Amino acid sequence: MQQPIETDAVIIGAGPVGLFQVFELGLLEIKAHVIDSLPLPGGQCVELYPDKPIYDIPAIPVCTGQELTNNLLKQIEPFNAQFHLGQEVISLEQQEDGRLKLVTSLGKEFISRTVFIAAGVGAFQPRTLKLDGIEAFEGKQLFYSVKDPERFQDKRIVIFGGGDSALDWALHFVGKAKSVVLIHRRDDFKAAPKSITRMRELCATHAMEFIVGQPTGYEVLNDRLSEVSVADIDGNTHQIPVDDVLVFFGLSPKLGPIVDWGLEIDRKQITVNTATFQTGTLGIYAVGDINIYPGKKKLILSGFHEAALAAFAAAEYLHPEKQIQLQYTTTSPKLHKALGVKSPTFE
Figure 1 (cartoon, rainbow, N blue to C red):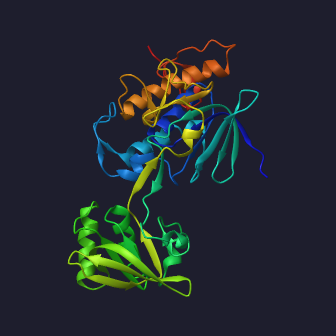
Figure 2 (figure 1 turned 120 degrees about the vertical axis):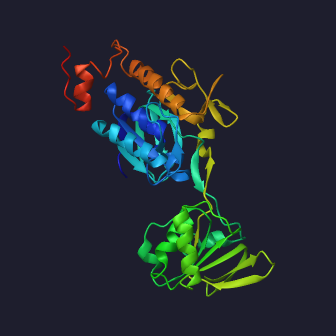
């Protein structure tokens, strides 16, 4: 058994607000560990609209979700936050000494003096293929993400979905897999135009196949998936031989284990004190879309403001013997040292 990781701060959620929480804590000399159920930082900005423009980040006229994430990761580099990705916090309990014990879905344990819940609208889970019993093949022949592309070499692949992930992987596997069949419920895609064009070109040359339709069933031979059944828009059923099925129906947010942590929940959001953004439990803060209070606006910039106030509140909680000074990154030598920058000379 690994020993629990002991720390002053754990941040649940690696979206923009969670990443900025790292920065605000870092300025106050509080190092953080960050946990997220997704395999990469960025939250819904990266998962749902990595290439779509965002126009309401102060002083940045326009940036994509991925660009915003990249800039935030660059900004927090001086603070050496430790990331624990691809795992969900499944339990959070206050210990007798006031510290907080967290356990993740991978069995990793943390003992932290403070916890910042920046989980957005919850942990993102893949929308699943709705066919009775199909879940028995998950991780064997049914996949909702691609971790090892080489595993699909020379396989007959059926891909469900109409977004960037579905088209990107379909294009990737053409020429590598034995066959690629893309299935979407309509002949309209939420993907990059160049990907759509390329897909249609490959279909025209029979390098891959596209069917407008819905999954209706599957066949099993020797305990393995052998075919999937698809009903097209004319009501015809296609039996498609298959080795592996990839499903990209997008992600669905779920509040998940948070509801069992003893926090006050209102309409699937956590209530907070707006002076500190602390929840009803000492040492636990909630920032970003996961919280609710009178006048709440679900904006990234609101989450940034909340992260700043939560950081100062946490610093006072962690170090009651100290007077926490408000310092400015423009003029503070202490903050310049923390950020690894040279203090400017003002004349």
